[in-house]
Image (tube, rainbow, N blue to C red; front, side, top):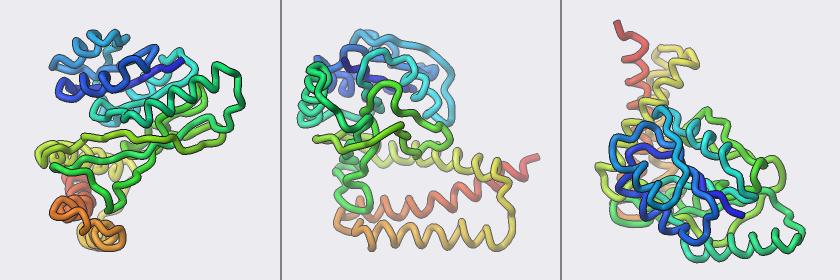
Length: 258
């Protein structure tokens, strides 16, 4: 009844905990692995996953969609390797499966799941980081990823609803983990700026290096009350703003290389 699908790359630190959280719930586990050099594939296979190896792409949503396309069960749950399914969400999925098996009418074809985001030692409660809803659970064939951006939402072909429970998202347990992703995301954004033929002039420079960082910081830290989350809230807001400036400077480097 339930396919759990993931795209992975060097996730040996996280994958076992993720798959343990869906043990007894998933009827099928699909892992599309982007050329991991650690024990990721071996760990996936130890949980009975069907593992498919491919290249590691800068836009990892391409590999996520590949995993989604391979799902065979009626319901699909798309996870990241650093996410855990909490008990309330497990129970919601079980109730949904029972409803489908009993041929009860289901109004939605996809469900938003609230996420708790763990950042440098705590779950963030403000700064736009909670409830952070994402479409991850859907009727097979009724949702897809556009695969154009690393922060895009899944698109559903029909009505959506909210699931009970949460995904526990341990993407940035340490600041080093966050910096690694910061480097990846800013590089991807720089490439997007180049592909969009972004003009280089004083206006775009001031916009990306000064205006966007300031606005982003104050939106997260003040309007969305990121200050409630202590120093972690400040750091998250500061680096979220800095993302624009770093991406633009990387774009300049790419544009004028050679």
